[in-house]
Amino acid sequence: MNKIPGLDFENFIGRKVDLIYVDTRGKFSQRRVDLYAIRNGKARVFDFNKRGFRTLAIERILAIQAVKPVAVG
Image (cartoon, rainbow, N blue to C red; front, side, top):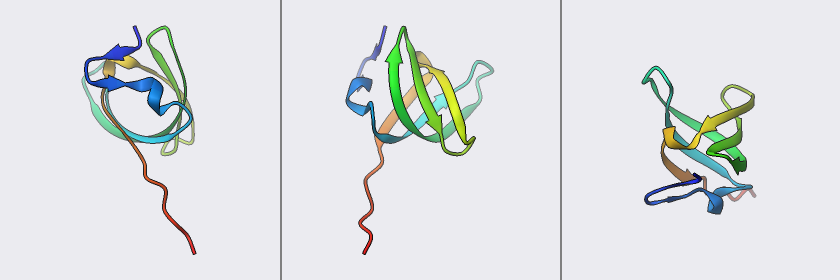
């Protein structure tokens, strides 16, 4: 299942997003990631804080918001 009520993850594929995630131990974290793919209830992301790729369970993502681009110049 790739949907949680109120969250349409497909709209965020290919974008930089901030998300709130709860791990299997119940620890909450805020993460800034590039969302690459969603398949079989999992999101494949590049986590900027951890500087690496991660696979996150969709049902553990509590909130997601696109990062607005910053104009330079």
